[in-house]
Structure formats: C-alpha cells, structure tokens
Image 1 (tube, rainbow, N blue to C red):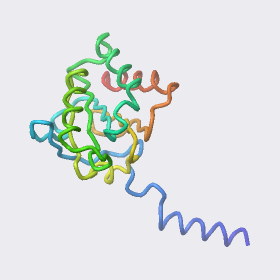
Image 2 (image 1 turned 135 degrees about the vertical axis):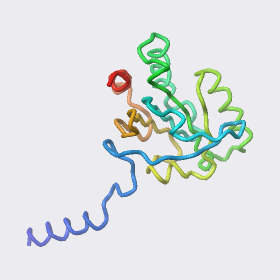
Image 3 (image 1 turned 120 degrees about the horizontal axis):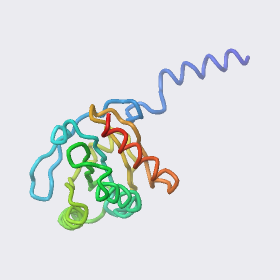
Image 4 (image 1 turned 180 degrees about the horizontal axis):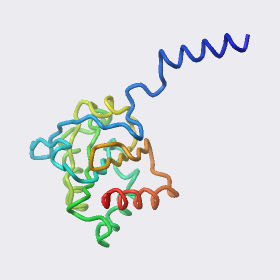
Length: 175
C-alpha cells in the first residue's frame, strides 16, 4: 500500500509541480518591458552586465521592504555596490492596488528620487504572474549578470536575511 501511495504521489508531483511557472533560485529570469512615470519603456537589457535587484511591490505595501532597500542603499553609498556593476530598481504591481495609477506614479516618482533609481509600473500583473510573485506584498529578486535568479523573497525580507542578501549582491558583482 505504501508503494502505491508513493507512486501516486510521485505521478501527481510530476504532473502538477507546485512551483510550475514560478521563478526559482537557479532559473534564468524571463525578460519584461514596463514603462516609467514618463512612459519610457525599460527591459532587463537596460541593465545588461549588471547584478540587478528587482523590488516588485504592491503600492499599498510600498514600505514592506524599506529596511532591505535602505541596507542596499547604504552598501551602495559606502562604495560596496558599484554603479558600473549593480543596479536596484522598483516595479509597482499596480493591478493589486485599489489606488489610481496616477497616484501610484507619484509614489513611484518619490521613491525613484529618494533612491536615485528607476521605478517602473506593471499595470496588468504580468511579471507577478510570469514569475509567480506574491500578490498584495513585496518581492525582492536578486539576479546575477546573466539574469540567473540568485535569491528571491516573496513577502517581507526577514531581518536576519538582510545582511546575507547584501553580501550576496556584493559578491555577485565581483564575479
């Protein structure tokens, strides 16, 4: 009986993998194209050859990973993360918010100014669906120079993971 149950479980897991369609560590991230507040389109190619941190966030939860973003900003300000080899961007998951797009764009502009970065807008949850990201939350995705996912946190980055993720970004840019 145990063998039959194990065989059935194995077949179900193969036929319906739990993580199908979700970006996982070790996967090459699929490309995307999103506009900024001025409707300039960006793709991952705009940061070719750089380690890329993508903060994908529901605008209603815009501060959920502020502690992590601040730690990455400090590493950049301290010269540990270099402009030539690292970039951090934000993408607003507009579809998951009740806020009007114009208000979301104004929040994005403020964040872009604060962090001296690019904030993009995913109006249709395309990236959330393509990468299996968490809705109504924040997501932090660290991609290496070849767009391979090296870390992904769906939800709030745990405090004890902030320093290791910053160090991972530093190490990846030096490879």
